[in-house]
Structures are given as structure tokens and as C-alpha cells.
Length: 451
Ligand SMILES: NC(=O)c1ccc[n+]([C@@H]2O[C@H](COP(=O)([O-])OP(=O)(O)OC[C@H]3O[C@@H](n4cnc5c(N)ncnc54)[C@H](OP(=O)(O)O)[C@@H]3O)[C@@H](O)[C@H]2O)c1
Image (cartoon, rainbow, N blue to C red; front, side, top):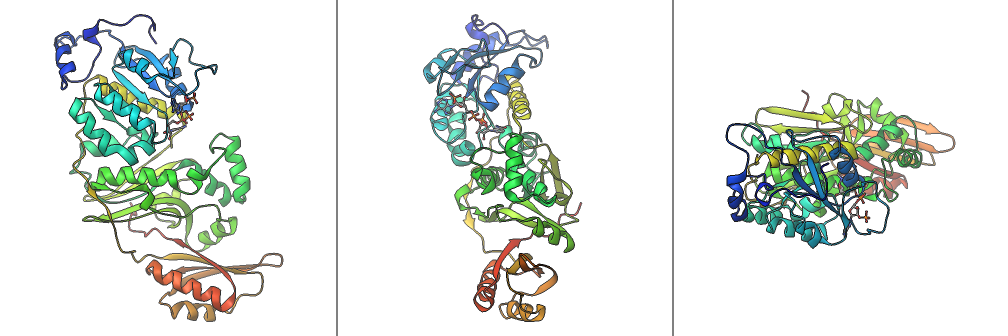
């Protein structure tokens, strides 16, 4: 990181193409056309100096961008009385001071929709490029921010918002024809994947959560991960980019992973698959079917073979399934991805802006298989009685597995043939009413993606 005290000559600080009036005045002083690099530092402001912002500050002392140092012009925080690791970076609670320090690029790692939206809008309006890791911001306000950025000539980059450890958003944005996509099925949240992988090894949900907290993988309030809020925001970003549809994260059907047991995973394996924390969206015209939650994934599906904190995503594209996988989003990899975005912006590389989006409409529930769990402290009705009751509601059983435990009663796991959700809900209501059993259903991911 170069000295915080000195600033480069005014005309050298904006690295992007001179699309704004301010940038145009700087064109003459940019890098010479003979390919020689200027040593002008890239001036970067940090919006947020928490887990991600601090990781960026640390990384910025060790790397250069195309031979250019990173000069951290200041960091915006909520409480500047706290001692900070990032020695030498001026810390402030004043947004005006951040902009007055004339950064070329602001890295936004504040989190949440506000005040991040207001602050980012302010930066973009003033021609400061923005690179963000904030999925809540982009999922809720991406279109508004992009419109302001386009008008001012500033760049807005968001590779770090979805599986930062696997850079692929920019690739998809650059290749709209090769990557024409009609559905997305992914494991987009490393924390829930870690939890289900631990439950698969026999841990209870509470035990797995305690371990995730010990390892720094789960927040003290884990609801955003466990209840699928985080994944629904990432899904909305993907549907906007790939389906050109504006999908509100709040409209995504969500199911928590908190009631998944080691027995569920054991019997899912017996039935030929596993349970994974899946985010799925499929679209046709303006209609989208989207859900987030634990889902039965057949063993042959690419997502079945990854575990732990690994993320993966399968896209149904015009040319066949595309599979991206790798580490999720720890602070270090997020910092690297943010600085790679900064480097691209500093080189003047621009992504095509996404086409105008259409408001997404809810699609009818598709026919898919379901993994049913029916359990009771008392003996369960005979297998054929249960199957008949389900069949009377149009739900037909493909295969089943059961366990009995003197302490915990009996449980049966039934994998159905494809059927719409409304029939499954009615059938399980009937089972509960007729037998007093507890009953739940996990959606399945169809095995149409074998690579
Ligand atoms: N953590 C990860 O591994 C990770 C990975 C990928 C993406 N992300 C995303 O990156 C973003 C930041 O995450 P994080 O884990 O770094 O969060 P964090 O540790 O809570 O840090 C947030 C930072 O923003 C500052 N801040 C928050 N509200 C502010 C306000 N109203 N005014 C001024 N400053 C404010 C905080 O100031 P104080 O320091 O004074 O509290 C803190 O420095 C989130 O959108 C997250 O989803 C995180």
C-alpha cells in the first residue's frame, strides 16, 4: 500500500475509459499508448472495514494490480473509536470524507441494503467506480445502481456476491450466447452445506451448528444461512443476469435446513441420493419457479459429489449442462475476487450491462419427485395402507426405506414419482389426519444434469 499522505496528480487517478465528463478530462494523462505501464497507484476506498474489508486491506499490502500499487485512500466504518488492524488506512464515519479523498474505485463491504445503497449511489453519481461483495444490495437494488452507473460512466462490479471463490459471473456476462441458460441449480451457501455434510456424518443439527460456529463458518445468528435468505439473494442475482428477470428474493419459496436429521441423510442414501442445501430456479418467458432449501439430489447429479463448504452450480444451457464448482466465500477469497474486479476496472475493462429485466411472475409448481418422511412414536400403518392413502391423492411411491427405534418410534422415507407440490401437501395432510403421524416432504432435484 502506498503512502496515505501523498496523492497522485489529479489527472492520473481515474483508470477506467473516459466515458464520463470527468473521465474525459483525464484521458490525456492516462497510460502512454506504447504499452509502457505507469506506476500510478490505483486509489481505492474501502466502504466497510469488517471481515471482508480488513481482508482486502491486508491483501492490498501484498499484491499489486498489473504492476500498480494499491493506495487505500480511506475506510468507512460505523464506529471509528474501535482499534483496527489496518494500520495506516485513514478510518472515518463520514462518507463525504471518503469521496473527498478522490478514490478511483470504492470497494463496498458494508453489508445489507441500507445505507449501502445510498452510499454506493453517491459514489457512482460522482463517477467513482464501485466493486461490491454485498449480495443483499445487488439483489434488491442492482438495477437502480446499474442505471446510475451507466449514466455517470462509472463501473459497477459484483463478482464477489455469488460464490466468490469460483469466478464465473463475469464469464457468463461476457458470453450471453454461449451461456444462454434456462435453469440454475446450485449449492450457493457454504455454511448450510457444511452443516448438512456434518449431519450426514451423524451430527445433530445443533452439534453441527456449534462446530460451524467454532470454525467461524456460522454467524451468532445463523438464520440468514439456515433459513435460505442468503441463498435466495444469490439466486435472484443469477436469475437477473441469466434469465433477464427481476426476481424478488422474498418471492423465492424457502425451507429451513434446521429439521434435517442424520436419519434423513442415511435413508436418502439408501434411496439413491443425498440431501443438499439447494437453490434452484427455472424460467420460461416471464415465469420463474424458484426455491431454496434442503433437497433430495440423486447420486448421479454433479451436486451430489461435493461436500463440506464447497459450492457448486449447474446451469442448463443451450449447449448442455455447465458445471462450476469450488470454494465458497471466505474473507480471503472474497478479498482476492474484489481486487481482481478492481484490477479489471483499473485496466478499463468493462462488462456488458445486463439487458433490461422483466418482472418475474410465479410459475406453476412443476412435477418433481419428493422424499417424504413419515414418523410416529407408535407403529406406523402398513406400507401398502400408507401407499394407498398417498395414491388416493395422486402421490405414487417409487421406493421406500424405514427404520424403527424402541426410543424414537418408527419412521419411513418414501421417494415419490414426479407430482406437483399441491398434491403432496394434500396427501401429507391426509396422512397426518388419518394416522396422527408427523409428515414432511423434501423436494427433489431431477437428474437431468448428469454430465
Ligand atoms: N464475511 C465473508 O466471508 C463474506 C464473503 C462474501 C461476501 N460477503 C459480503 O460482504 C459484505 C461485508 O461482510 P463482512 O463479513 O465483512 O461484514 P462485517 O464484518 O459486519 O463488516 C461490515 C463493515 O461495514 C461497516 N458498516 C456497517 N454498517 C455501516 C454503516 N451504517 N456506516 C458505516 N459503516 C458501516 C462496519 O463498521 P464497524 O467496523 O464500525 O462495525 C464494518 O466495518 C456483506 O455484504 C457480506 O454478505 C462476506
